[in-house]
Length: 336
Image (tube, rainbow, N blue to C red; front, side, top):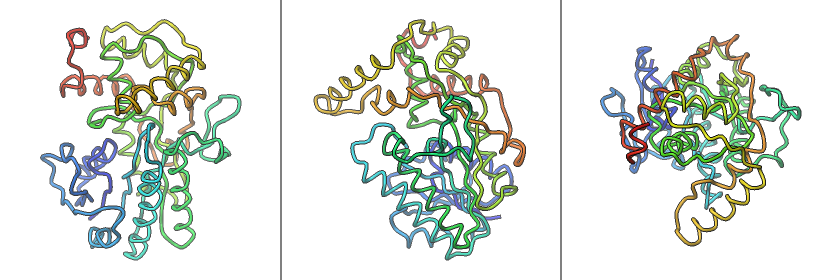
């Protein structure tokens, strides 16, 4: 079966490509002229040069495809140009879905995020039906993905057979950029985590997320959403797991949220206005840390058969990959 993957050079997308090839599919990857192709090296995929903002390239890439996996997104917590992020995540998604509709593909899997789902007031794990208030979504990434998800729902109502998946926080190898979570792991390996705030997130093996996409295409109900997640952990528990894997001490000092946000505001100003670089602690991330991003993935587990690989194993692979690929270079880091 011939399939199109957007975002196939990225973290989740490159794992999806590998899983599709293992399933025997013929894979076409939409790539921009400036895309890094490291994650596709050695793979038997067809590269279709194009861009989400150019519908004609999407139509060309879709020729003969049975299924579309739209994974491409601008995923950053720190963003100087929200309009550009909106163009990629919302308008780009609209273009992909329209092209898929015109090509009469048999299934579209749209990669959303738990970031645009609601949270339970009492901190208990949220699910696909938890109510969300758009005004309370923090940062341009969450807001743009929320609007992109509405695009997917609109095209479903027009007859496009689309299934939405909402990955939580994937961890594992091939996190080339790296993602915000990957940066946190690298920061830990570099010995830069001197404290922690009281927060939490749902971690999932990136390989399980990739398999979850394929399961959604095969078993998912069109128009439905599926959380692709696994373990709800506090930030301290995540650092403790990393410490167990590396021997690097886990931070013991809990930092108040107000202090973390104050530091982030100062560091963001210094990095942006003085150093002209991305901040180490994005202010949006500090704000998000006030909430435990905990979710219930039982729908995907029960209806799709989503795998639930050990988070410790996924973190072990992530640590090894970052070390093997030179993301950590100091003497102290190498001892870890």
